[in-house]
Length: 92
Image (cartoon, rainbow, N blue to C red; front, top):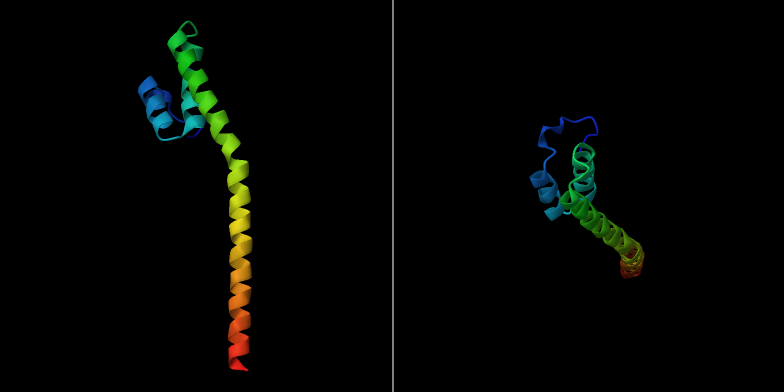
């Protein structure tokens, strides 16, 4: 979402939709906007806290995932190298 975007759709419903889609940063942006306008609404603060904790939990999963992706790439490169060697030896 664009920071300078029209704020017409900055609603609780849109924040919930973004949360359900896993777009936590967008949902947080909307909740913060709504809280700026209605700081006394504890339901918005609770929703913001819940989404922020989800975002933190999700970001903690990426280091393990990136290691798996790196490992997969190394394995695929080795596999391709072995395949090329076999083709080379088959031609001889």
